[in-house]
Image (cartoon, rainbow, N blue to C red; front, top):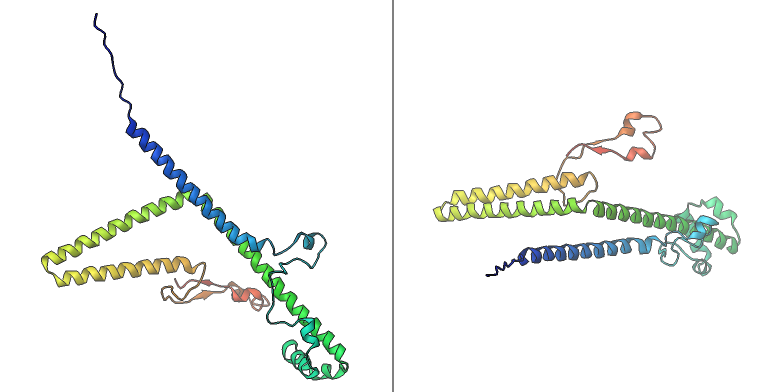
Length: 253
């Protein structure tokens, strides 16, 4: 009696392909996570020192990243003590708006030192608040960017793949056109291909400049007319003279 044996062939190539894709996706995800953590750390290491918990609970003045903030335009108490009376009066007059009558009423040097130290302290506190505000804004912007990148990661990867394919197709098309012009020895054709490439580059430059002009400004943008529309100017009254008067919508692009 004959025995029939059947052998089954296992498709190892498909399994190998799946493992390779899984490995590459996990590697890209690991790199993406590492990059994102580095970005977050770079934003939050300095941002978390903007305000300490004592400032929120008891209004303490020891926070604000005092160890990292140093003012180069204000004077400390020791520096003020070492100054002469003439120099103190000159700084009070030029930097803090003291009039000649106010300086004339201050006869004692200790009072002058106290007045200048107080003014320098106020200026230093103002600069520290601006520094803290900049740190907090940077942290908020970093958080928003991180969330947008993480949430829209599939979209960004798809856009990158589409842009890469379109770029390869465009380069191959221009290479083919240039090679045909060389084969036919057509100088006019080569000039036309070069002009088309320049016009395409300028069109891309204009498109990117218009998109970025809604968020930021740069000297490297395509030169465009500046036609701002200021809503505060249309409202008139005190609104037109307030802080909103400096904001407008550029409709030039």
